[in-house]
Image 1 (cartoon, helix red, strand yellow):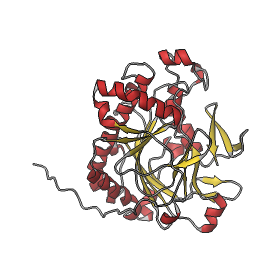
Image 2 (image 1 turned 30 degrees about the vertical axis):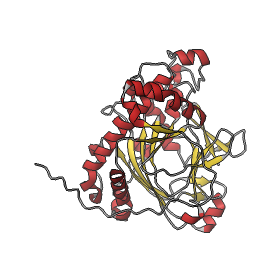
Image 3 (image 1 turned 45 degrees about the vertical axis):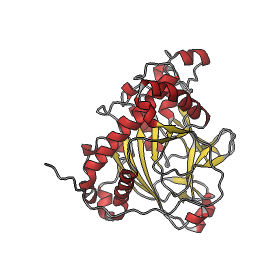
Image 4 (image 1 turned 135 degrees about the vertical axis):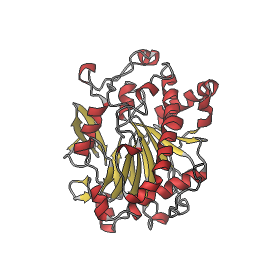
Length: 366
């Protein structure tokens, strides 16, 4: 009989939530447990549809993991940044130009945040393909791979797939339309990612206007952030203002990305968000994040679901014609190789910079 004792992992203890009086976004809270039944999905999909159409973000509660399990995954998420030597980290460094997406370690200073002032990021992250044994991992992380594998399965089947069914219902499509484009065992780079945002000097904060990661959209379809109390995440609201995302214990913060915008003909937009310096009462802390970034299978062509009765009524926003639309593999490779290293051009609007990937304009927001 296998042992039920988990390997020892140092505790990660976050600070209390901020007490600052911040301008928080008013996001819908979705009871994901209702998505387990056909009746519940029929009740939920209008709420999810309207929330994603308005803000592009939702909170999800009752997602099937306990607070204890969530605390444990944050303990594990901190291991790559506290228990792996610099030399070993180099051996497991990712190469997005070669691999077509970040896997393994991303080191600090890889991304240029401000060309004029020569400001670079202070972000480290460690990414694992959803099939966690696809690649080897640092020694300190190996005892926890079975738990990380459980984590990726839970995110994929119990969070992302239910959300994809609700999005399909929103377009009056068969429930499995998008699920069939997100198969766990298919070729692709859907991943779990642990991210550590490290504190910066006052001089760096002034140069970057307190922005730690400039406004952007995720390149995939559905992104899952496991809520944690250190603030910093902000979303661009419909009125053009940046608003903070509030922490909710054991909740998920979910948003749509570029691939979903392509697949839905612009009906669900890729949501613009950024990371800034935490609130004043949390300035002393580094910020640890746990994510699951889902993408369609590599061979999925990123074209609108034109068979949708909803899209036939409201119209389709075409980013390009179907014959030149990239598949997911080409899109992720182009976006990953260029991010933070390709010089950007000033867009038509102030504070918006642009680059061209696969013939499609990608915008970045300062």
